[in-house]
Image (cartoon, rainbow, N blue to C red; front, top):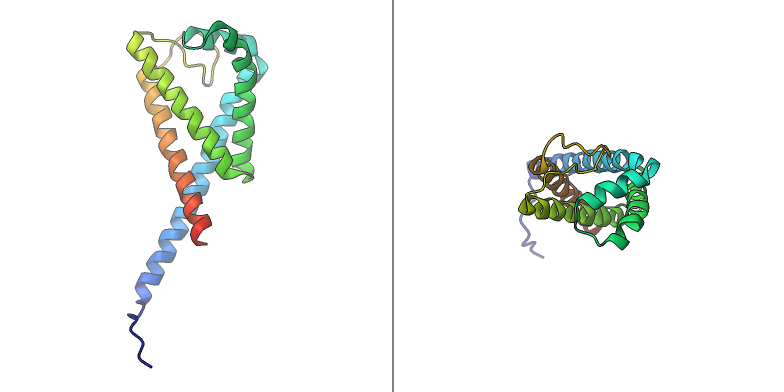
Length: 162
């Protein structure tokens, strides 16, 4: 019986192991980073929902009736999703939520840039002053979104092939 399969080169096996090992390490680092960012960002909002409601209202996107419920619920979604990434439980579900939130936040920044508003993002501080500017916040959230998407698709690939 003749084997038509090409022989597997030893160096390709070693490189594949290095790549998957490095990608796994990078995935863990990015997952923990995202988890820490979301836990940190949620803490002040949980402690001061009224202050967070003012920040949400300053965006001038949500109707008035939705501001207070959002200020009460959103920080808990952020902290639970962040803790989930830190513990490794429900990682893909948490990544879906966090990536969706980052996309929504980026759209909110773009809307306010188009309106000519430069407001505090309310991400890590509830002070109304703008420290960095909307373009900085947009860039930061898009960078975090790229990291979140990378980890999400790596987790799917890992589940599929391992």
